[in-house]
Every structure is written in structure tokens, then in C-alpha cells.
Length: 457
Image (tube, rainbow, N blue to C red; front, side):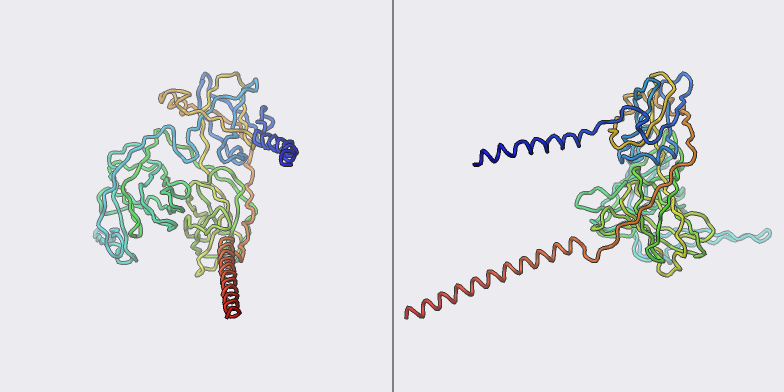
């Protein structure tokens, strides 16, 4: 009987296995016409290795999060060897990394004192007054000092070696100064460790706009806590500066209410920042940006900014990871949004090295879900000096007009029943029923035993 059943199920199992293999091994595109966007590429004359920066029209069409659907075809339809100049985390193949120690600074109540010098000049007379903002700070602050005085090249990012508590967003503020008294703001970043592992949500790097830190120090400060510490930092110097970010327009944003905007961006490449601009007469509106990947997850704080009427967009820096949903909440003390604010997405430019070994003309093709990643390591294409020369020989990419507009789909509505809460209550109810049934069986058994003893007497 069992043997007959097994023989009967074998054809169905084989069919399922074939279907699974077919689904996993979807055919890759072989021709450039199969991709969503095709643009002509013209390398510098005589260069066998060059740099290509994808325009906005190409970036918006990428459909794979691993950016595997980027190809360059030669005149015979063969694909060229490609390597990422900057990988998905923003790491450059032409970068110098320095591991620097963190020098603890004495914690003080009311925050770290930031000296502010005010000079008043009337005629030939002038008066300077120096004060600090420590009196206005609230809470206890902790800070460390990073000695960056020997760095000569532009600094594009800093990664903190930080110990973080689980599921607690921590805001780190970076400032630079040359005399340990006066400080200028550099950047601010919220880091969150969502699980038991030390990894943080998204990209831990704090991006900097190629700042000069030679003969300067960097101070890192945060709200003090027993489980928060910074022991060092990896400082990244750019040998060649990354091109400017690509701004992509969006449409479809809808207000949940007068103080809240939720959306799910239909984009695959990592988002570096969300830019927000008031479109109504709303005055000053402080906002916070939250993100999550699933409705069952709590909203995590990502960034904050203040929107001001008539002052253009405010930039909400992200961690470099694209989440499924975002929520922008206006300060309840403000008037909120009378109209849907204008939302644009800033993404890091996709810069690649291409070995132009074939015959032209060449075409850049992007946008195909079945195109598997075929990236080489930059070192496979040339020596550091070869890559440096290639970086300075940028190929021209055909302009395709305006980039496609990124759709902002509505975020999933909040459910009154959290799946985790429902599962917990179900387990509790089931456990209660099991205990009640066991108690009922025990009472019945005792009653039978008592009745049997009475009959025996």
C-alpha cells in the first residue's frame, strides 16, 4: 500500500522539482533591447578602461537591489567587464581608510559646552563676548574626540566603532574644530541596533561632503547612557571625489492626516536622503522621519529636520538602506501640512569602471529583474594607478531627457490587531484552556475515586 502511494506521488514530486528549478533558473537577458533603458556610451578616444556615471534616467530604471541589472554592450552584442567604483554601501574603490582612536571627554551635566563668540563693532570700537550653550542644554551628554589633524585629502565619511543598546535609537552629532574651544557642525546621524547582533540598521557610515579636516579635530557627542560607548572611528579619505547625488522626483504622496505623510517608494537603489519642501502656507514645521520594513515592526526614527515656508527643501539624511515604508510626522505643536509637501529622493550616483575592449558603438542597458550581478573586483580590471587614470577619463552617456518619476505607493494601513499581540494572546488562551481541561480531568478523577471508596465501604 505504501509502495503504491509512493509510486503515485513520484510524478507529482518530479513535476514540482522541475517547476522549482525553472523558477530559480529564469533565463538572463541576452540582448540590450530586453532592458528597460538603453543609452549610448562614448568612452574617451584610445581608452581601454574608463569611468561611467549613470544618469538619473538610468538610475530610476534599475529594478534589482543588488544593481545586477546594469550592463554595457559592444557593437557585437557582447557585455563588457564592469566593476563598481562605489559599492552599494558607499565604499569607494579609490579611498584611504584610517582607523583612529577615540579620546574620551569628561561628561558634564547639561551637555557638552560649545563656546560661541559674538563680536560687536561700532565705529572704531569692538567688543567680543564668549559664552557657551551648556546652560541651555538638557540632559547629560557624553563625547569623544577624534584627532584628524594629519588627514590631507577630503573626508567623505566616518564610521563609528560604537556600542549601542538594543532597539534604542541613538543620535550622534559630529562637529569639527581647530582649537578645542569652538566647534562647527559637520553631520548628525541616528544609529539603531535592531537585534542581538552588533550590526546597525542600514548603513552605519556618516556621510560627509568631502570636508577638509587637516589640522582639525572631530568631536562626537550623544545623550549619555550606560550601554552607549564610542571606542574609535574609521575615517575615509577620497582619492577622487564621488560625483554629486542624483535627485529623483516623485509622485503619489498622500497625507494620512494633517500632520502625517506615509509612503512606500517604488525604487530599488538605496536612498541616501529624502528631501521635503512645503507647498502650503504652513510657516515652520519640525518633522521626524521614521521607517520600517513590515507592518508588524515598530517605526524606527531615522532623521529629523525643520521645514520653513519659502526656504526650499530640507534634507533628511538616511542610512543608505531603502526600507519598505516611511512615515513623516509633523510636530503636533505646528500647523502641520495644509497641502501635500513636495518629496524627492536623493540617491548616491552609481559610478562604474568599464573595460572598453570590444568595438563600438557601446550602449548602457539597465532594468531587468532576471539579470544576475556580474561585477568584477576593481583590482581585476587594473592596478591602482590604472583605476586612477580611468577615474579621470569619464565616458559620455547619452541624455535621455527627464528621468522617470518615482511612484510613492500608499503605505500599508495600521491594523488594530498587531500579529505578534494576537499570537501572544492566542498562546495564552490556549494555555489557559489546556490547564482548565487538565484541572477538570483531575477533579473528575478525584470524584470517581471518592465514589468508588464509598461503594467499597
